[in-house]
Length: 188
Image 1 (spheres, helix red, strand yellow):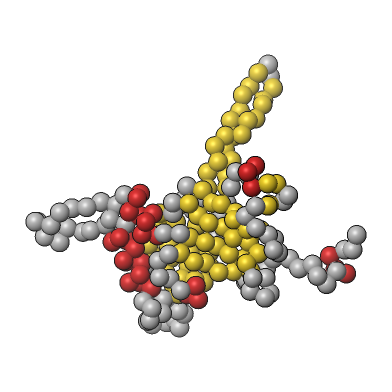
Image 2 (cartoon, rainbow, N blue to C red):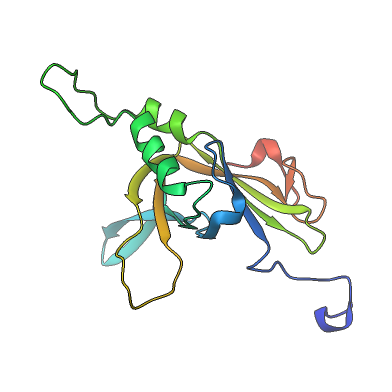
């Protein structure tokens, strides 16, 4: 078997080859960084006759943090504010205006489908994650301003989701296979 260093066809996945997309109109070129999904398995211990036994518990998916730059056009601040309104947030501006609240359904609908894709050197998708029922839990509209810096304005959006699904992995990989495990036997 040839080693990694002597086989020119073997290439690792690279951190800078990725795209992020969601149904909301956020062009991928304004997304500066994004977290990949992380699953955490809880554990339960049971003590018996001086021995400790560990059992797996529930799976929890960690939040996804997205950092965006804010161009003048398209206006990303306006896009995030629209997401918040479409999620159901409506501040009472007049005593006669009905008060509405955020719901999971309206928030997940506002965000829509979310995909994190890693790509190869030719731009082909080699890994794709889809977040299920994503809801936004934090909207950072640009932090602080200062005359002492030339940095770009950065916005931050935090998403919670019910689970992530690996839909594609590997060169030419499909949703049907992942590490030679048939799709019907995979859990995510």
